[in-house]
Each structure stands twice: as structure tokens, then as C-alpha cells.
Length: 378
Image (cartoon, rainbow, N blue to C red):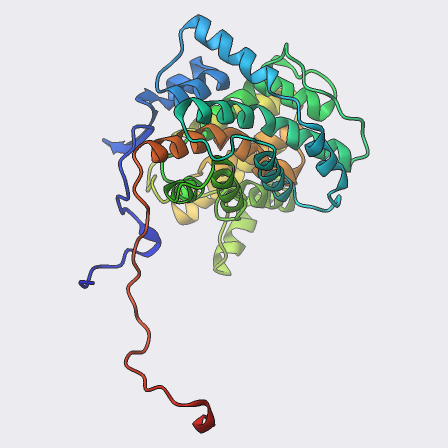
């Protein structure tokens, strides 16, 4: 192996070609596109179901195609009794992301076509997984709280149905739109850690469920999907806007990291998803009379003052989820609920033009050591 520069964390390494999403910095502005469509247009004008169709099929649907797709998702929302039994018997203290990845693995065991990878079969599996993620999350939460399960309804949108199953009442139009837009913004983001892991698994020709399990496990890490939960802990610790600057200053003096700021790709520019989520958080805080957006703004101002760092998507996700009444430990599950169509699109793209992903490591350990027989080792 020739000597090559090691880029820690594979930073800026081009690992593969993809037609799914584009991230670029143009004249100081961050560009994020799904299949060529600007995220700002999709977030403001589209729906999560439409974005799922776009990611899975490659382009925006016609009106009748979208209607059929929405029906197909709605009809797949309910869980097999085996999965409900699993959710009932898991310990109540089980982390909701462990519940999700365990349920996905169990769903794979129920699929008689587990190893089939035709495009048609992959699309069938994809629609089922997208539809069932919200039900798994909502059902487990209600089970651990000792509440009756609220079955999914065919009439509500993907976002509204989740909030209905979680809380037991239909959400306001503002709450529905807020979650819908949040899911759109989380749906896809090129080769982030969980997506890359999903593609690595797919490159071995592992089944789709195994690839998604790998992705969910990766997303759970606090430096990836778990960041919003850490942000919420910070918001609760700060509690009021007037304490924000003192809190930030003290954290920085102690050399501690403040979660929800900076991004590997969006260096020195605003994450376009954070920009859109900020508006959502503000609107929700006004409707729900929530303090968390004001606390978030005060923290963001202080971090920029002392560190010149800008918020990322995780920062404003926390106050959005809190305003929607979503428990803190479900935050990363909501991220997964949004990201699942992106994972599935990448898994299918990897299957369609596959080459085993197998990088190398630069060896820096000792060399040419003499083997000493066990009897002579002291």
C-alpha cells in the first residue's frame, strides 16, 4: 500500500457517486437539494409523503401518483401482532432507539422475501418501513406509560397520524405542519454517518432490514442523531434566556462542547435546515406559549459572540419537539422517522450499482517484532 495522506474521520473524502442529494457551498450560501430540488422549496411547498416518493422513485409524483402513494403508506401503518407483543414485553427502561432497531430486525424475520432485492421488492419493503416507524415509536411510548394503544388512522397525514397515536388527540394544523416540515428537513443528507453505514452494509448485499438496523444503531450516537436530546438537556439546565450567556461562557472556559453548533459540511455558513427549523420553532413557541425558543435564541447569540459558531439542525429540533409535547428520549426516534426514506433510497442505489465498500487503514503500530515462545516470556 502506497503512503497516502490520512484524512481523520474521512473528512472531505469522496467515497462514491450518488444521484440522491447535493450539498454545496455557492457564494457563501449552503445549497441542499434532494434529487435536484432545493430543500427550501420542498420544506415550504411539499409534504413528507411527497418527499418520500421523490427520494424512493427519483422525481416528484403526479397528483394521482401521490394520492396512491399516500394510501399505500396509510394501509401499511398497523403492526403485526408479533411486533406488538415484542413492544409489550420489552423492559420499560429500554431506550426507544433500541426498541426501534429491535423491531426492525424482528420485522425482517417476518418477511418471507427477506433476501429479495429487486427494485419492486425493495420499494415494497421501503413503504412498509416508512409507514411502520411512527407506529412502533408511538405504541412503545404508550405501552411504557401504561396507556391504551391508539391504532393508526387512514385519514390523517403521516405527521398528524403520529401525533394522534402519541397523544390521543388530533394535532393543530400548526403542529402537524411543524412535524411534517421537520421530517422533510431530516429526510436526507448525503453521506452522514448513519447513511454511510447503511450503504456499507448494503454493499455486502445484506438485506434491507439489516442495513436499516445498522443505520439506527449509528444514529443513536450523541454526535449524530442523539445531539438534539443533548441540546434539550442544555435548554432545561439554562431554563431562562437571562442565564444563557453566563452558561455558554462558563462551558467554553471549561473547554466543554456546546451541542447543536457547527457542522462538518456547513463550515462558517448557516445550515439551511436550521434556518428553516428556526422559523418553525418560533411559530410553535407562540402557539404553545413555550419558553424553549427564547432560551435557544439566547444561547445561539452567546455561542456566536464567543465562538462564532452557527446552529445546526439539531439545535432547533429540540425546541420544536418539546413544543410538540414529544418526550426527550424520543427525539432521536423522530430523527429516524424522518431519515428512513433517505436511508432506503441510498440502500437501493447501492444495490443497483454495487461495489463492496472496503477502505484501508494506515498502519502506525510496531513492526517486525520477534515471536517469543510462551515458555520464555516473563
